[in-house]
Length: 434
Image (cartoon, rainbow, N blue to C red; front, side, top):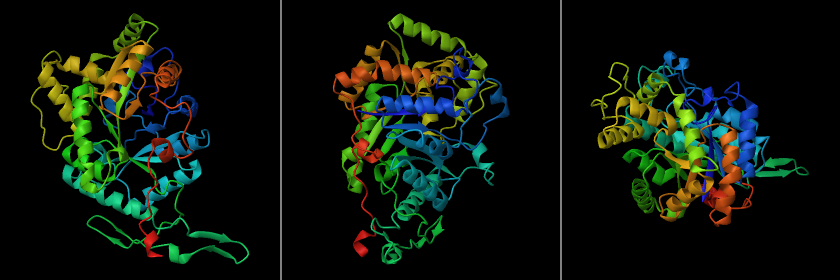
């Protein structure tokens, strides 16, 4: 089983900032350090940071901190010096970056961490981001994925532009590098023109681990072709099994094997010594969510302002064309359950559509084992309601049970993230040329 620790300001519960034990500040290196060290003590594969380039609305700042995202690679650079084994995964958009800058940024992180970097590739979904990056609106969904595919092609080419043997470092002969093993990319595409090479040698992993999260048809196709890990949001095991099988079946189209791609849904756990204690913990958290705040958050997930809709009535018919896979998932659940806007706001403010388990450590481990053994996933991205305390509790109570059952490692397999994930180091595309 593979495990990631999703670090998200005060914690993943929408009202975590209001909890009596929460930290005073969301951007607090000590909070992230304590969380990362707890995950490393638990032998997690990685810590993961989401990111966003906008504030959805100024009104959101009144009751929520879900808009606060420290720039991920900067923060991971700090954590690289505080940890030794755990992977460092950060989010960056292909819509509002350039391949050369991003390739340099993640190659630098991979060098500084000794081969522990991962890039969560996103295309961005909010119009508010476009307006912060010199555009009136987002590119159309299909165009964003077209750009993302070319962006990845360029970035991977840049990471390959230095062969492994390019650095000679012969002090006696005064010869640092072999120019015949350093290659221009000369990419001329629909979205990018990039000469290359990168001004950094090839990094320890060859290239950072690639993570993607799209569940749309276009997102799955891109993941099957380019991703090492896929993060998903799903709270129904049978649905997760269908997604897992469907995605893995696409890998052969690109000459890949099922084990080359790890599927890791999110998991939020309220853990108590008894089931009743866990339920009480969840109740305390949920009572801190103001109904109107839950509706505002639901509006953000749906890309539609629900403030004028009656809270105690079902979700109205909303635009589906061009919307995100998360929004479509919420619409489908609303149609299936008949939940009101108030109920949906509370439900998604708690776990945002991810699997949520409330119970003892044994019950949490049982659920994880069942999903893993039934091939609904290859592991989980752990999203604890309060950080760092919730992650420390998970490491101390659930991880030992997984280890006792032979489901999770007791020691790291290697120093790089690829080694710990059981992924091969990519072959350099230019190696056969010299």
